[in-house]
Length: 390
Image (cartoon, rainbow, N blue to C red; front, top):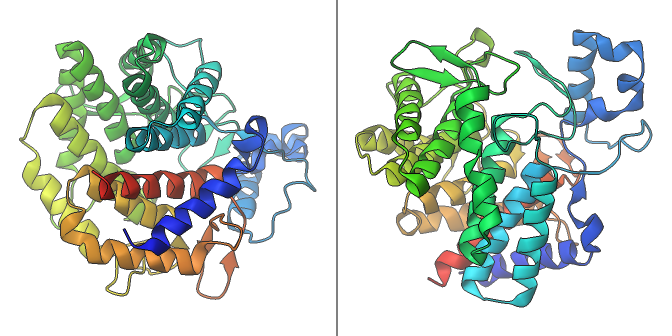
């Protein structure tokens, strides 16, 4: 690995671990605007349009007004999960006691934050969320954080052999099968984002499939594989001729972006491996070709949309590493990955070691988000370290 990349990871790791562990994994999020008492405790929070504008105001603003409006740093289960999976990779590389301590701390915090009134283990974001398609109240379980927490607990089990982590994680299959809604027909369908909506978002449905596929690997319960296959086939049917996917089915979900494309590919590869089912290999290869050739330039810039270069978002270069490692294609694209990571370090890493959120054409959003930016880069760089030493 280029020494610059190792030094970048060390700077990020050192600044993170300089914080006492009780506060280390608390942070702001691009979507946490509705945690402000101005919205939560007044009539303003009852209006869908105001909620949507308020969320976008904080997501897009390069100035961080959160303290002024009473938004506090919080633990986000998805951030905990991404850091947990990263520490599991680091532990495989070097069995340090500090890594196993971090693994157990994070796994236990994830368990403490699970929602327990549903059919199985599931997790939410620590804020309400207004999108164009739906409103998700605070503490509504969502498949995205749920899938990451599920995977992280199984990663922790594989590192520690603590049965509790596996036992809790495997109950997530019941949440997916019993609590998520379905759109489609009796043969193929998409899982919903949460129990509260009926949206068709391809990466969300594929993450539900990935959960079921990994549960099938552990349990050999064929009902898990069958439901996973139905969702995967639905999403494969929605793949465009060029290998891309739009974000979702609705008319206002017709954009094609970088990191959601990566999510789709990772879930499809996991389904293939966990279920030993190679029928979608050609669709995966077509998707990978589109992903690499569309979203990453020869000079290492990570495009956000298929038809627009900006913003440079740290999530995108991180997802490139994760996707190529999962596809076992890191070596063939070593030069591209090197350029992408070097560009990201140069453009987006602060002197202290944290990574910024986004760089637009005219300005940089330097707000330090824990889940969105820094957990992803911590995880992606840990993968590079592990693969460079394997």
